[in-house]
Length: 154
Image (cartoon, rainbow, N blue to C red; front, side):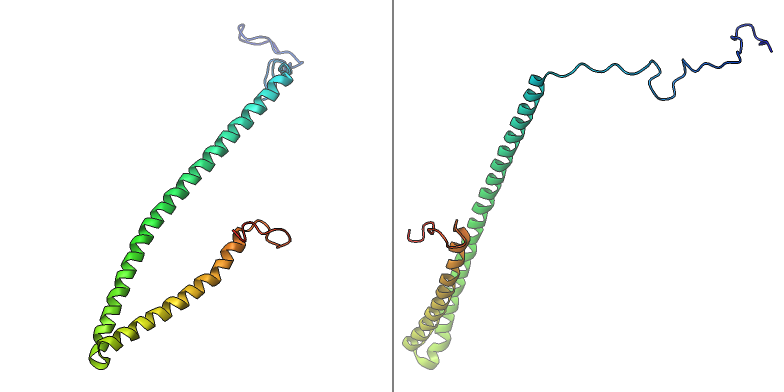
């Protein structure tokens, strides 16, 4: 049956799908890109490794600065806390001496308070010394004690 509109192409019995895209390559297979030279690939790998190394060094430096900042602030506030605790213990000692003076006398009250504080200090020092070994063990290179201890006698 001929077409009624003369501007439309005639319909043929055999349909051609040459010019229709189905989402694939309508103009034929894609042209393969030219091969990349090995020198360029190696150069790109070296550049990427170099950039990665620079980024790692920057990260290590930033972590070090953060640790230094944190350690300095911890030391400052730790010093403030230690000073406040020392003043509080001094006030406690004076208060204990004043409270015991009417019953024991000033000299004996002072000796009792000083003896008690020295005993507390001795126990705390003994405990600190026992934990010092843990620090040395943690910082030792040879954890199995098979070789020479790093700085054991230093």
